Image 1 (cartoon, rainbow, N blue to C red):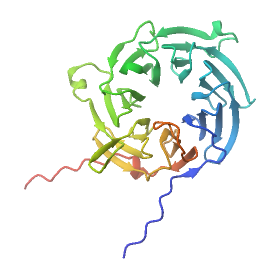
Image 2 (cartoon, rainbow, N blue to C red):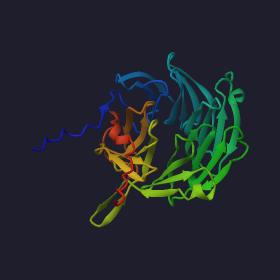
Image 3 (cartoon, rainbow, N blue to C red):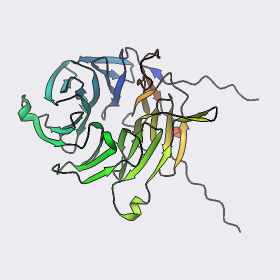
Length: 342
């Protein structure tokens, strides 16, 4: 006799979620604290394990990205053109600097000790948050990009910048004067997200057209032969292919496998080395806007938040789910080789 399956659990829903679209969420490198930016003009700090809202920071416009500095402070990128530093313990914030258009992305580099921001003003800026107050003392450099910046990712001293027009620039943070590599996305449609492999050998890039490309930094023929792209976040209905944007990519910190989230409301887990899907979580209420694994890979935060890909329409409320990750969902399966004939 088969035991009935319990209803699928999307994870524990955090109380006090943002009241508008969730632009990003990220776990701390030091704890289970979770930083969340939203179009409701706030950045919220949660203790994800305790389901507690620890702090909230109001901004002058929608907040398009956020990241941790350490467990007591973080940074945010806002549509009011500002880059802000948030100090959690004091509940205060100050303006680190400004762009000439909305700031889309913010990253903190532990290797360089700098904050890196990308904007729709078609520039990248590097800031030293240790500088005294006053923008001219914190700005390290401004680096023009071919188009509006859509996504950034760091690994060690490498920085990958994905812009409109399907451009991808790869920098070495120790020499920002020009990109180490200028590339074009191997996908035909607009880039949504870029994330570096934790082992530093390349990056995954997703597009609005239900695809992910797996790329490698090493330009040798052998390395470039390993690159590939795959279709995902699609469904067939009445003989028609319905294709969804892939908004989010998050790598598992232990196994190097990765999760993708799409406007179809699904989160899939992939083994990029073996080109296999490991797991698909049951459907979330609406689009997956962002994903983040905790530092030990035991928790996965999922932003279920409509991303307006079909315009303004009634939609499920914005929610953050924190799920416990089972090893079977994220651990690569060993390759099974057929027994050689005796």
